[in-house]
Image 1: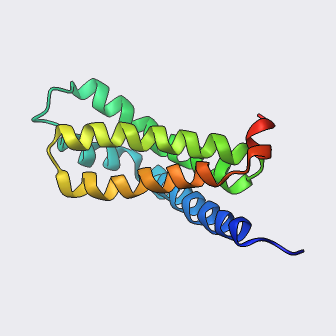
Image 2: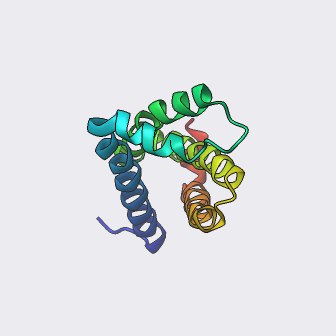
Length: 130
């Protein structure tokens, strides 16, 4: 098997983002209520109602886990994992900037760039199969 540098780069990106998203979700599941309580408290001084914030936080680990699984499974599924991951990061960025937590927003922008590059790295033939 003779992989090109682009193919190797795509594998590395897929493994990194896939493991990252999978583990973000997986480690939060056993302590889901504590995670929601801790993170929800950070939105107390924003315009978001607690019911909306808590609903989002309860589903977030499941969405992260799903994104990571799709990415790691690869093939046609990786595209949808990257899209889901990008949407998750977009939602997180909204909340982070609403709290005016600019340091975290800067870190989240790295994920935006990573998901952008991962999607751009998919070959045109992969994109046509969807």
